[in-house]
Image (cartoon, rainbow, N blue to C red; front, side, top):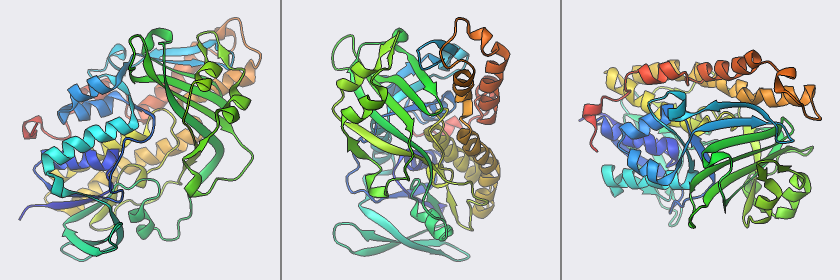
Length: 423
C-alpha cells in the first residue's frame, strides 16, 4: 500500500496540498470542521510564485476568469501623493501573473477541484479534530461529527495541520501556547463594486503605520465598467484584542467614516466607497511568535497553522500554497516520510520565521512610515524626502527574503513534475 496523508483543514493551504498530493499520486483525505464551506472573506493577493503553482495544478483558466491580473503596486502618503510604484506580475518580468481575487471564491475554486479529483468521499466536512496519536508505523486521528456528536477515527502515514491560526493540531503540539499576539490595530474590510481607479489593475496602499488604506480590484463587476473592489481600512487602537468570537464582527460604516471620513485622495474618494458599503467586518491584526519546530514524527504544519503572520506584503495565502507544494516535493523525493517532513521543515521554517518578524516591522511598506515621519504635511518632490535607492532597498530586500526574486521564481524547477499532472 502506498503513502496515505490526512490533511486537517479545508482552507487555501489544505486544499492546495490535497490537489498537489493527488497530482503526485499520493492518497489523501481532507477533514474540515465546517459542514458546508461558503465563499467567505474579501480580497487576497496571490504572488506569481503561488500563481505558478496553481497553474501547474491546472487551475490557470479558472483563476483568470475569477480574479484580476494585478499590474502595479503603488504606495502613497495620507494625502494621496505618490511615494513609490513598481510593476507586478507579468509586467515585472515574471512568467506568471499576480492575481487579486476574492478569498472565498478562491477557496470554492480549489474545493470544486478537490472534490472532482480526489472524490467527494475524500473531502469530509463537519468533522472536528479532537485528538491524534502516533506510533512507529502510523498516525491515528479522532474526529467528532458537529451534527450528530458521533466520534470516528482514521489512520494514515502522515497528518498535516492546515487548520489556520487557531490550529487544533498546533495546540496539541504546543499546549501551553496562548492566544495569538495582538498588534493593537484593527482592520475594517469590505468589498463594493466601483469604477476603476489608477488604470483598473493597481493595488494601492496609502497612509502610514498607524492609519492606512489598502485598495485593489478583485474581480469583474456585475455591471459594465465596474470592478468588485476590496478596501481595507487599518488603524491603531488603544484597546486589548477582542475575544475570538468577535474577530469577524460586523461594524457600522459610521465607525469607519469617523476615522477615514476625510480621506478624499486625488485618485480615489475613500469616504464615498465606505458610504456605499453594506457589510463591513472588523478583524484584529494578529500573528503568533515563530516556533522552533513544525514537525513531530509523522505530524507537521503548513500555512497559518505553521506561521501565522500579519497580512503585509501579500504573503500569507501565497506562502501557504508554496508550503503545500514544497511538502509534496519532499514526499516525492524522500522514501522515508519522516525524513521528508524534516526536509520540508528545514526548507520552509527559517524563511517563514524571518518573514513573520519582518512583517511586524512593516515589511515592504516601511517606506510609508519613513515618509510620514519626514514629511507629515506632504512634499513637493519625493526625492527630497526619501531617495530612490532607499526605496529600492526596502522593496528588493523583502522580495529576496520572501522568495519573490524574479529570476529565482522564473528559474526554479517545478515542485511536482508536470508529467504527473492529472488535469
